[in-house]
Image (cartoon, rainbow, N blue to C red):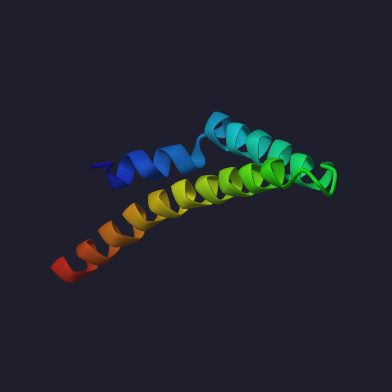
Length: 74
């Protein structure tokens, strides 16, 4: 299980952010610049963008869950 500290570190890490931005932009470009018949490429690009979002959401969820636990302890 990932810790709140590790999740926060990743979400603030410039390299992590840059890599996600690069991948996201590549996939959006692929989506925009495919021919209308290239459904597989668009679906793959869409799936990758969704996967990136799921990763980001999971990291944020770890942070939020830990904050809620901390608040309940008080």
